[in-house]
Amino acid sequence: MSDTPRTDKNRFHSDIGGWVCYSSLCRQLERELHAANSIIRQQQLLDEENLRLQERIKRLEEENDAMRADLLLWNEKEVKL
Image (cartoon, rainbow, N blue to C red; front, side, top):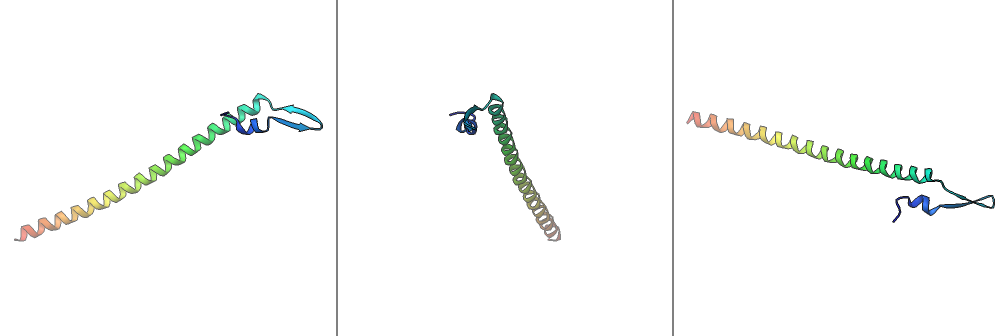
């Protein structure tokens, strides 16, 4: 499979009765576009994972705070006994 499918699909284009071959520049631009889109998608996935992990950290901190509050309450009850 080619790494420049769009260029290959339209490799020859009829223009005023003649055939014009796309240059290697067009193929290189398509490769660079594909690479840039891949990088952008990877960054989007990393951003989504980062957000998910930040939310998990927040939940764990809230659970930790709740457990500390319960422990303090438990200790206060034991001291009174």
